[in-house]
Image (cartoon, rainbow, N blue to C red):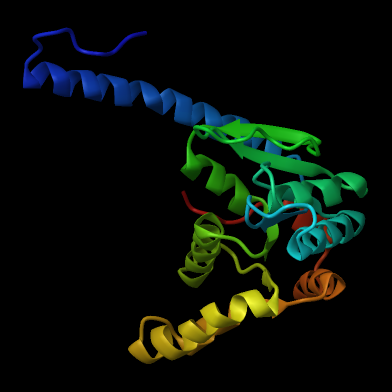
Length: 239
């Protein structure tokens, strides 16, 4: 259906056309949430893994991601990535080789490569915000590999949700001391003295280098809890 206003339209006509077009988008957004909820609710427990799309197979962080994802998969966690190349591919590749599901939450972008070929379950989104909800709502933990603006966005998103109580507290693991130290030092030397974060906010995440230590940290967080209950519980994310 073409919602473009005809030639010679008034400002009122153009505004009405824009409203009509945006109103129809609601149904597309609803469909993405419904499909995402239906597919992801059956996948548990899961760990969301983030990182750069630009890193190649020979990059040490790619290899590290594949290693940790295989360990997570063999430990019983489905691994969720953005479904694209680079670190996302490494995450899906490692999980695909393991015993649990490899899941890709793909996004439609102009001039971007398609999804990687290591996905047991593949969903495709048009809207970033719908996709981001799926990363958080069903995650038992976040593993954040080195990445760019998109990775930082996801890291800041989960920190904000946990800090404000909109999400239950889950393990947030930054992999790679060398990569993340500068950012965390900035938290300590700029944000903390300025009073824009609290000292306890620095305890919301851990920096880890060893894949097995990361897996152990996730299990340690849930020590004493029934893993079947963790598996069946979605995040208390309010959207």
